[in-house]
Length: 142
Image 1 (cartoon, rainbow, N blue to C red):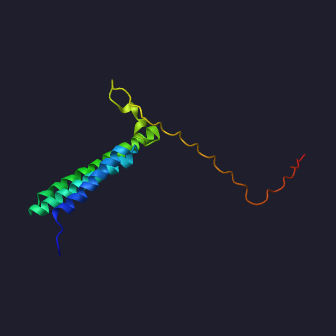
Image 2: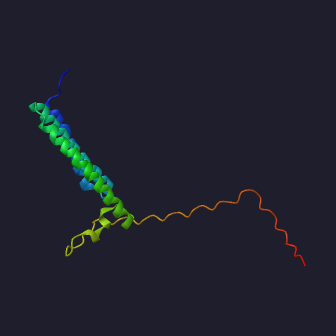
Image 3: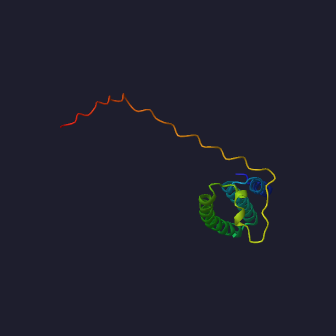
């Protein structure tokens, strides 16, 4: 079995990190931003594993265990925050949460406005099943 050279692993790790960074900076959806941060962490993990194999020690794998542990904690906290903020604003767009900035800091304006929210179509009205029975006048018992 032929081992791949170190630079192949480093290139894959750098590509993952760069894609995660571009996705984090270009997107406004919190879930996509969260997934891009996870992709950057995976790129770093690949580089650490490659260096550990290249040097012949286990320090890189030990760092990867810490990274995976921190990523799991981050995932739980981030998803809880995302759910809490979604319940408040009914949107995952980062630009809608201007009230979360620090006091005294000016609001940032997006260069491109958000598209208007689409109107929800009305719910369909179902026709009654079968033929409606004829109404007969009630007889009064006098």
